[in-house]
Length: 111
Ligand SMILES: [Zn+2]
Image (tube, rainbow, N blue to C red):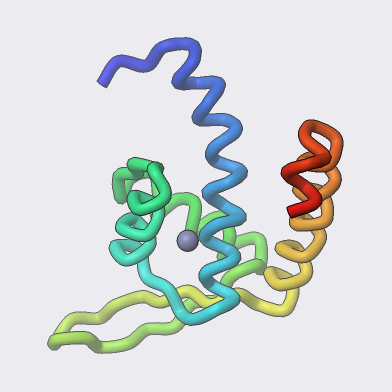
């Protein structure tokens, strides 16, 4: 895939959305990489493991996610779950999202 200027612009915006999306799901239940790739695909984001895993690692490094190891089908699988700091970061980000949507499209924000 060739990367055009628009792809880069979209990538910068979408990475923020993707981080929030991951954080949200990690507040609902423990998530793992492949499952999250499928979930994001459902929302129209196509991510390779090489893009997703560093995002998960960074969120964990920043203390927003904690990891759990579980054996699934004889294989060790790493799950991620939001920490209290992660939940607070999501709440704070949602406030900002609401404010931004209200600014851009008040009708949309009211829904
Ligand atoms: Zn989702």
